Length: 184
Image (cartoon, rainbow, N blue to C red):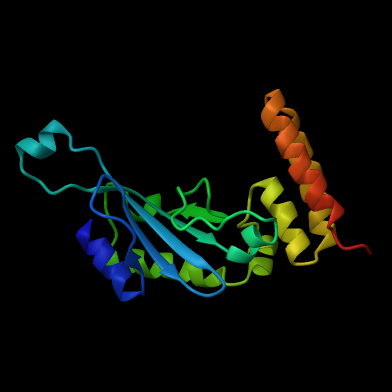
């Protein structure tokens, strides 16, 4: 776990919190924040008995664009609970499976993924922003009406499946964003 954090530190990521079960790293830019969560595998009694080092179960990377939150009057999370609060997130489980990849390769893959999503417009086109309501909000911010109307339809379908109180909140969020979509 320490080797992965050290490899990510060479890519500009800094530790975001103290030691714990999940190690978080962040790299802040003026226009975006790149976050990484390193989740260790459970201690397991066999591993403890053989005194083997803890292995990594999952590495999750996420990108937060502060403009997305500020445009809709929400505070920018200093440390999102990945992947729930990140605008775009992905996991690197294939690189940390039972046969772990070289830590430098893992760090390079995380860095490359984050750098490819510098611009929210690119992330929206690539489908990296998957949640329909967020897609709608980023379509508003990037002035993309077609993507916004598609995302609004998908968000309404998703919102209809929610319980009453969250449904009302989601529908308000959709209506607010849809009203701000650019006219043709």
